[in-house]
Image (cartoon, rainbow over all chains, first blue to last red; front, top):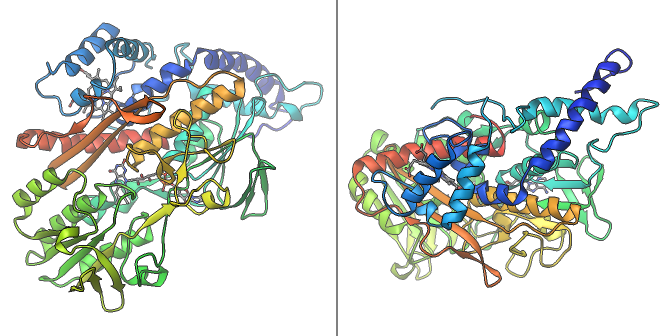
Length: 109
Length: 442
Ligand SMILES: Cc1cc2nc3c(=O)[nH]c(=O)nc-3n(C[C@H](O)[C@H](O)[C@H](O)COP(=O)(O)OP(=O)(O)OC[C@H]3O[C@@H](n4cnc5c(N)ncnc54)[C@H](O)[C@@H]3O)c2cc1C
């Protein structure tokens, strides 16, 4: 990351000004309250729910589908659940809808 | 396990990796004559120092930078490679290599722009808002995060000091101690007894001793089938007790024996040289391998900061995990008093996110976001036999409380399929939390 003058300087300055603006937008886009609510999900679904392992990913999936699943876990309507039934019961229906919305809005590559 | 190393992408379609490349360039801008440092240059929104690069500290550093890339965040951690206690029991059981519980700091540095300093924090001056390091440097902070984990209370259990731990390892911090214990188990003759001494509450990882007993029993069943595991416990009840004892019976018959407090299980003296322990009422047990999980306290740097109380742990304000005793010092993970949350890696990670958000908000002059925490502790009884305990926590009446109806144990009557799924999800959890904490796949 060490940019040395003068050769890389012009490019670096241009890039940093451009990306700097994007970065500011990113920080503004970061909803601290919702991130805190969703924080625990990352421990099994990966950062931003984006990890594709045997635990299913959440990032970028349909919000209605995610919400429906979360409500079903909470109401004991999923037969082969191992853990989500116990976790979903820790949130109100509105909070589950908000979580679904949050993960649906994480863009996947 | 499938490996996923896709960089995170924001809603704007720009990956954070690209953004941080930009940040690296931006941070060099002040060197360039004629250009003023732009508002987004790193560090302009405040200085945060994080001490400890384990579950709590590494998570705090990452989530501070995610929420506000303009903070300067310095992580102080002596180790270049961190070995996780989670899954170190699987190493003892022969299910995993040490290299598969090892994590580094490249992603925090390269992708998130955290400055990582590999040295020990030696002292803290809360009035001067500074930290002195073993390498001679001094760091100044606006906010300080401590996640130093535990230290052993040497000699709190008679005869158990640092020298004794070289003969009768605790292996309650992963690394050389874990490898020493593994060698001892491998060198034990068939027919020998592995004795595990379990402490009173509170201690790091409430189900940990019982998962360890399970994994050692698994190894012994395969390699030294006439051997036994004896647990001498200072308590009458332990985490997931019914699930553990049910699983032991099913997988290991009577080769694991547990003796609780009222059965004279509380060990009061350790003779590491002779591998003997004495209990409260004078029974002497001889071990072939002796594993002592000793009494514990917050990592010593917490004492230097003046944040511990008489219990040896750190009382914190629940909404932010800021110390109740010293302003601008936030303490997360095992060192903190956060009951009913257990001292787990999962909780350390969850608390770090709450503290990071509180710090970001405070430095902006915003109010503290409402906290949410959760926890799940998976334990493996056998390679295909997993169990768990979960909890979701909020603040109620000013203290941390489990949300009613949430969490709880795996069902006691679960099918073999469910036990197997939980064993597989335990691995999924391990991979995910390590990705979330260090960004690495062991
Ligand atoms: C056998 C075993 C099994 C476990 N299994 C699980 C499990 O399955 N799931 C789970 O969630 N939890 C598990 N745990 C618990 C988990 O390991 C801890 O709860 C977790 O590590 C706590 O995180 P922490 O950040 O508080 O401390 P740590 O992760 O221990 O990190 C502390 C770091 O601080 C550093 N440090 C200390 N002092 C200083 C200083 N002065 N200067 C600089 N750096 C310093 C240390 O080097 C260390 O790297 C287990 C524990 C054990 C012992």
